[in-house]
Length: 236
Image (cartoon, rainbow, N blue to C red):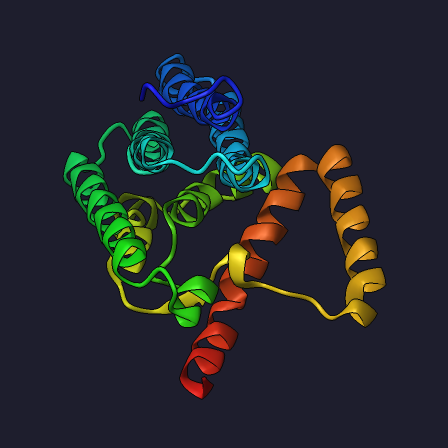
């Protein structure tokens, strides 16, 4: 801690903001402001991707930052999404199962512990850089909040049984050994850069004009990529 400079604290500042968003999401859900609660968790996930990249860019990687990021992820993506969905389902059906919230939190904490241990033991393993084992906690948060996003955007009829047991799905995926893509390991050929820019510009445009639809498409595309990740992982 004595060796940490002001520059090294910049990535940690983004981590603290992400943590603040996660905790505030619970507060807004208690006040039944569910759209704001879900939005804050989404923004927290964006910041979670920024802090690590900033640390690498500024060359300020530290064990403190890694542990802080992991603890922040547990609050923002391992607890907050489950509580938000629980409170939302309670507002719709008057009764929901708290046991699934506990199960989700246990799985997310196990996922983060396994991820930290895996990074420590296999830091130079190319497969470990390109692929995660199971889905990450931010990805699990996105899948957890997907029914709420559908509700905000399309206002469909809600299946009570599905929502009550829905948290079981992302919880199991977190502790599974299914290979999924890691953003750090994804690389694009130069000839595909132009296409990638068009896709990103289109997504940003949709994000500004129809936020919930953009998030729904992003989450669906990510989970549709899992079979490709499994195939590529086995191929290599």
